[in-house]
Image (cartoon, rainbow, N blue to C red; front, side):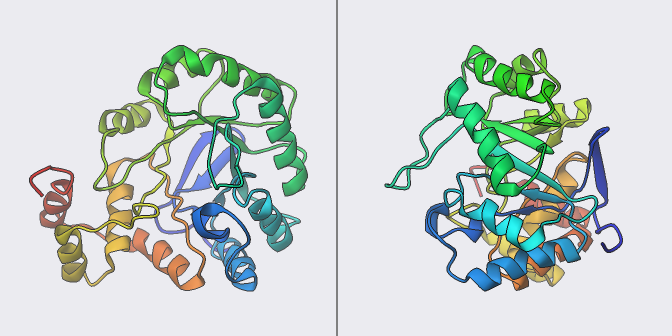
Length: 289
């Protein structure tokens, strides 16, 4: 493993310290995270480059593919490098139509955890994020999160997080078991969770934005492009640098299926954002921009 990446590390629990610049494996599957990768050899090479770069936060899920991406992770990296921490998600399943329906019943969650264990080839999962559906009712998280808390007590899971949740759902989950990470939709142009980002920082909880670069519809903003040109970087690098600046407990998991884009994401952590650039970038989420 190399020296600590620019951006440093974040300690979330006694068993979970990760680099703030991580990697999200969703794009290693086919279109819409379904089916095999377009270039299997490159997918394996990307995963090996992640480990070689010293990245210790790898985000995946058994419903990417489905099942295929965890198999790639195991093929590329097992036995896993010391210090590598693999985060996964449960709470959904895939359909032949590439849908993502909820899978939050006790049998579905127990099966999902065991599937992740088997396909990754580990005895315990470093971090499991419970992905909720779009319902924001706080009590809806109680039963599924209780199931994961029980599996944690059994030693199958080391740490728990939540995904696609409201602030109240996070607080409800906290009353059941420790929550070390919140994974929600957030980026420089989509900032509905600004208050939750700040609260997580106060609590020492990681905020892990999914779609940090816009997801299947990449971020497009003239101000972002201009700031990137002024600083000699790419728009995606500036968007990632802004996220690291936004909160001390922000963790990045940008996804890519190429080593070239991986190198660009890592380099984003070295970019200093001057005050003038920050003012411009902070205004991107304003409806007037």
